[in-house]
Length: 155
Image 1 (cartoon, rainbow, N blue to C red):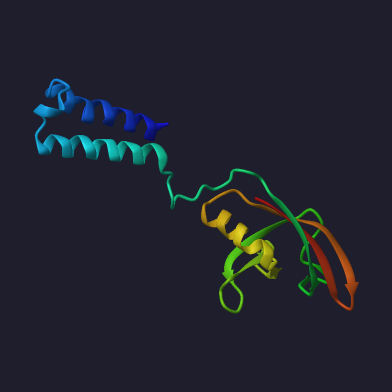
Image 2: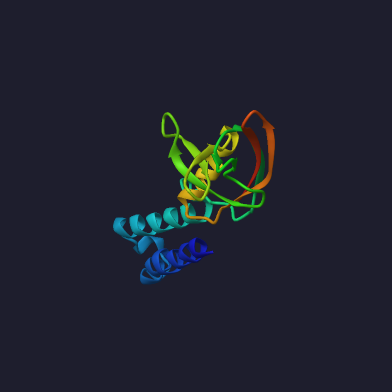
C-alpha cells in the first residue's frame, strides 16, 4: 500500500507540478522539464508494477515435525536420561561439519540430530528468533542399553 501511495504522490507532485508550471502546454516546456516529468513517470510506474525481489517473507504458520531418534545410549543412574513428555532443547551448528542441529536434554547431552529434511526450516526459525518447542513424545527401550525417542518439534 505504501509503494502505491508513493507512486501516486510522485505523479501528482512530480509530473503534475511540472505540467502546472508550464500551463499544461508541451510547447512551453524546456528539455529539463521533459526529463523531470519523464523520470517521475518512470519511477512511479516502477513503484506500481515491480515487487520487492530480495525480501524473503517468513511464514507465520506453525509447523509440527515428528521423527524418532534411534539407538540413543545416554543413561543416568540406569534409566534413560530422557522421560516421556520432557522438554528437549535444540543446539544449532553441531556435528562433524557444524551444519547439524543437535537435540539435547537438560544437561546439554547430545541425544541425536534433526533429520536433514527439516534442518533448513528449523534453522531458519532459530536464526529468526522464532519460538520453537521440542518435546519427547515417547521413550521406548529397544535392546541392550539403547532406546528410541519419538521427538516432536513445533516451530
